[in-house]
Image (cartoon, rainbow, N blue to C red):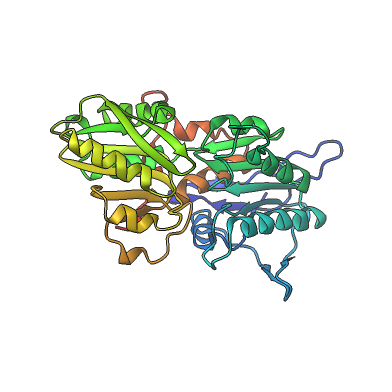
Length: 364
C-alpha cells in the first residue's frame, strides 16, 4: 500500500478506494493539479501533503480559446484540481478560470481518473444564488450544473457566500471554514476578550459573527444597511455597544470595499477606538484597495483563497495562508476520515488538536 508522510510530521497512509461495481479502484497516492488562478496556493497545499503539483499545460490557443493537456498518467488515480473561480494572476477573468477548471476536469475524466474532486477555494458566482427580480439567472446553480456534468465527483470549497449553495449539487460538498486561521491570528494580535467587539456588516452575516464572537470571547454588534443598487450600500443603524473598544468587522468576502469603509466610518462615529476587518476572500474589485487604504480601517486581514498582487506595497493588508486547512481536508477525503472534525473545537472534541491549523501569514 503506498504511503506518504503527512503534515506536521504525522505519518499519513493513503488508502486505496474500495472497488465497487462499475467503479475503478484508486491504486495511487492522490494527484494534485492546478490551473492558473492560484498556482501558489496549489504548490503550498501539495508541499504540505508531501506531494507535487502534476504536470499540465493550461494555456490558450492563438484564437484565445483555452487549451488544456494533462502531462502525466492519471489512470485509476484520485485527483484534486485546485482552482479558484476568480480573476487570475495572469490578468484573465474569473470566466477564464471557470473554463480552465471545466476543461481540466473533462481531460482528467477522459484520461480514466478514478475520482476527480474540484478544490475551489473561492466559488465564483456565489452571490448570484437566487433571483432578486424577474428574468434573472441563478448563476451559482449554473456553475454547479457545469461542474457535475463535466465529471467532478466532489466539491471542496471554503466559506460559501450562502450555505444553501451546497444544495445545488447532487454530489458531496465540503464547505471548509477559515474561522480557525483568522481567529488564531486575531488572538496572537491580542484582539480578543473585552478589548474587542465583533461586528457583523449586515443582518445576513450575524451567524458568522456569532461564531467569531464565541471563539474570541467577545460581544457582538450588527450594522444594518440597505442596497439602493448592486455593489452600493448605505449604513442605516448599528445595534450593539462599540464605544471604547476595538471593532472587528467579520465577513466572508470583500468585493468593492465600499460597504466596509462606510461601516467603519459609522462605527468610529459611535466611539470605537479602532476598526479592523477580517474576511476569507479578498476579491478587491475595481479600486477596492484604494478605498480601503483611505478608510478608517486599521488592518484588512484576508486569506489567500484569491491571490493579492503587490501585497508588499500595501502595509494595511495582511494575507494568511489556508493551505494547511485544504491539505488536511484532502488527506482526510483520501483516507475516508471525517472532514467535519477539522472544525470542531477542543471543547466539542477533546481529542482534537487545532494547532495544526495555524499557518504563518504570507505577508504581514
